[in-house]
Length: 40
Image (cartoon, rainbow, N blue to C red; front, side, top):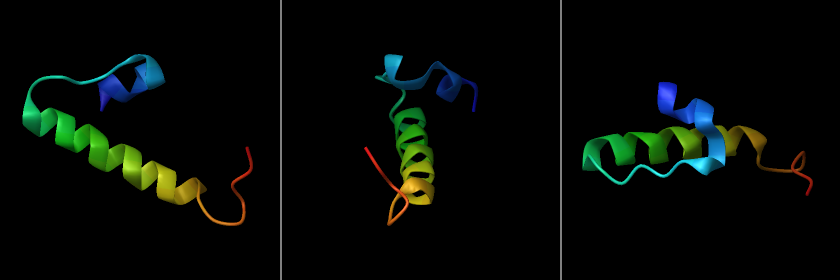
C-alpha cells in the first residue's frame, strides 16, 4: 500500500474503507514489534 511509505506524517481522512485498511495494516505491523523485543 503506497500511502504507508509516508510514515507518521500522513493521516487518511477519506475514504472510510481506505482508512480502515491503513489502520489494519499498521496494527499488524505493530504486533510484529510488540512484546519483549520492544524498547523505547
